[in-house]
Length: 565
Image (cartoon, rainbow, N blue to C red; front, side, top):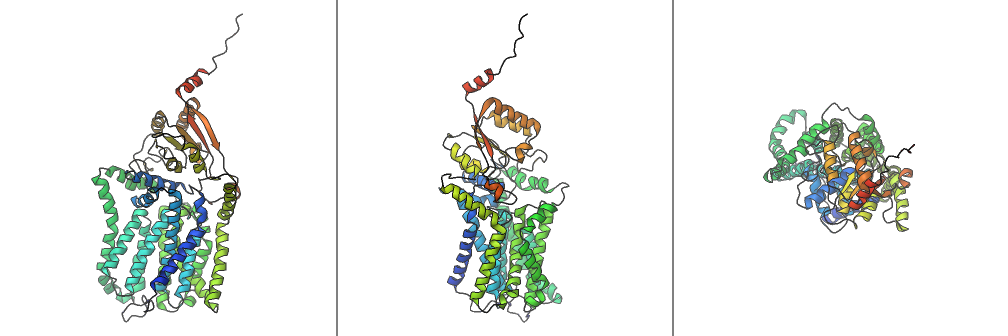
């Protein structure tokens, strides 16, 4: 796409006649359908990731009129919970709806990537765009991407903003102020979904000048001409955050916003924690084909691109990938879903490598489509074999009489929800807060994420810290109807005094209601490689009535009497 200036090596025009609207909509619908079909195994489970359970739980609280982090706490921004809220407000299953919403978002992001390819490359840009879009959809199946993840949505915001600016830049330079304002607003919404989008913005700023500055000598003048639209974009990115802060201030909940968005992040990302290289590399290994294709696109760019403008496009995509890497180094944690942020630039580079290096040698569109279908199918099986095989076993069991086979939170909720009365609470110890919104029970603690305040990092949870022993005593004194304990690392790592308190209460005031074991297929074909709590085993305890409590206490055997001589 070339701008209307004499410089031939900057952003290039799409064909003047454009694309019929119905044709563009058909492609968008096609990407959405592919995404829904490929990601359909995610519909089987209520909890693929404990983070997404908190998003839906917070969304259900928001739907009741409680601002995020005022009744239960988490350290994610407001926007992510606001996205989850509509899915919890209907009569339909919020988990199913949220997963479909995630898939639709993935499909639309893939379509937007195909349109970005058309602005950055010419001639066979359709092949590059389709390949990039398919790569994005397919690799969203890995690294926890089938869940309702923040990265799925902030990627969409980043890609939409980039597309808006690129399409405006093909008409005029600098881009129109209206477009820049809308793009800034979209990026600001992305920040309220996850702040990692700031690193995408850093790449876009560099990319703006890489793509639109004819020569280094033109840079000062071009920067002055672009100052107003870029400044407007920057100001508009602040608007969503300012609106959220004002809402909390007006409603008297500033302290809750500060604890969740400032203090918790200081604790979570502060300290002397090193970079989790092993975790990061294991997650990157799930994206290996994309990384190889992207590397080839960069190394072989001299032979794959057609002119200097396309070379600039490859440089921009490499810079974008580098900015995301800086984000991972800043975050340090190496969580698998963090690496979903790599997908947009890597997918576009993969599109260049495959379309120009492989598909270009085929004689017609039919042959290209056939090869791309074969490559896509093989890649899907390579990176998603376990969840696909897992789904076959689970669906078989569900069709033969076990309606919630493999899904522990669903199984628990199916048993407990009919028994719970209005206002009764359950207490979940572990990483299955999904049980709270599946049962509709009251939540006896603000620390719903695990059931306890963080033991070693006060304030990390996203709300004012409480001494864990005092919080446990308060929870137990509220006498929740059921206590659900996940057989996992959190329960085993409870601080000893807190665990003793819990065990004593279970022994004297509760009885074991039911044990829910893990389905064997979770060991044979793990649905998720790194995090998957929907199938973890749990033990449910039910509170005893007053008479039963007295019976338990009186049944303790007295000391045996010594015989009288």
